Length: 353
Image (cartoon, helix red, strand yellow):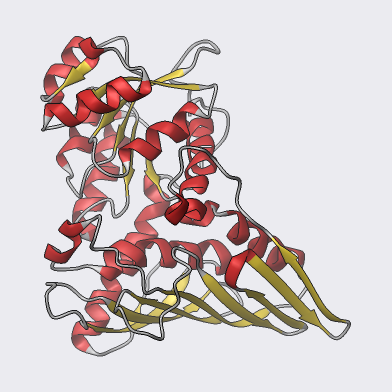
């Protein structure tokens, strides 16, 4: 993959979408010397103008029409970072203008649309990335290091839990209206994390529930998979049910993994405990702290910086980023296989390309 720039100048980014997450994404880009946000688009212009003022983007580079941005900023933008809700047209627009593109998860409302986005960028000869930051959380990277080192032997069973009492609907009320909720929202993250830790899925079984009566989609899901060369049994639990049994340490992810020589646990407050025949060793792996991060989302928002750094490497042609569109298609396949499994109450075999 060739670099989008012929020199060492910063990659110049246009941001499409100026909602809740855009402020943190832009702040994370500003932590990296190799990137610069130079233009903003939002269908409600006032939101883009407010972010432009906060982050030092010229008011002349604020738009409420994406085509106008691409025409007027031609030669001034190297890549597009899409931070909207699920909307495939922006990726196709970037491909038509021969610009590398990053989009949020889930990348599309179904697998076929996701495949079409990846294929459009490939046909245009431009890189396509998915901003999948969950695997970049500090304790999850540390957990992966334990597994890669072979400290607990070959993993045969693992559990990944995101079960929280946090009221996610308070600051993201649109989530109440989604026909498909927790599997597309949190499932995209947890299933990708499972792939990162254990390898590709061979089979999947899922059950879902809707506990909140005032939402359209599911707010509880359990996904069981057979994963990787070792055939590890992996269970992903996710819930926004508002139950008293759910923890209040949002948005921490917990995990417990058993191996042939021991176990490893990622528990509250970023503690990782490794137990073998020699005893238990515990170490805390807190995330870095940024002044712009919302304390309620600290672990997640700090991971945006590491994720962006990896994507920047891919944009500059300095190596392959982890979460390319092609790679994330495998996560998308798992998300929609989970819905298929839950609807039919059966195991889905996952074919690998």
